[in-house]
Image (cartoon, rainbow over all chains, first blue to last red; front, side):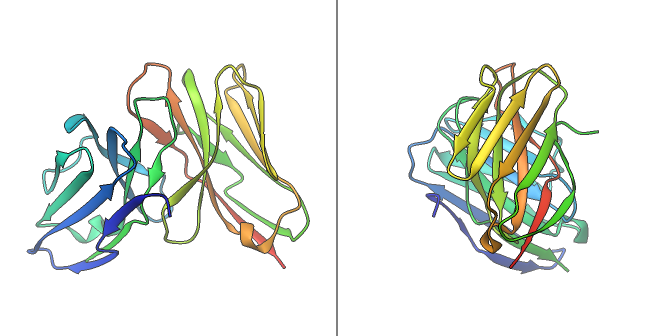
Length: 113
Length: 112
């Protein structure tokens, strides 16, 4: 256990559905990350929040909408996704900018039909 | 090629043998990290080496960093079947931002 939890662990949705992924950490970290991991591709950074402020937005389509209501919680709201969005979505947190390792959640396996 | 590119892409060895994985990167970095991922799970941090360090050990792991060649290696000694996983290097660049760039990983298979 890394101290970062993600729910749900598996999600199947149609292209017209709206769903949300949740990430939670109680490690006292100030930065939280969303990554996308597709088969045979490097981890793709999607969003970074530091102290609830978005500091990185890596050209992610608007059908992915992040939300960080406090430093312990991070959401990824999904709507009108495409089949190519099927992937493992990983959340991570770190104590501070560029100074420490990242702690990853177990991921949400998303399948878009 | 991408920042944090691992070599080889896949490696198959017998239990008890050593496994060496290499990583190359392009920009100046603050640190380089190695992570492990079991199939379909989250990544687990193994070791972090800072740009002013050349070698670091943790149990059966040995990491080296050569900033002049922009490369790092991860050595796992006396491998076990339980070491079967994907291994990723990741770099934090020297600009002080939040981005960490991951490579595509090396898939290690240790045969019992």
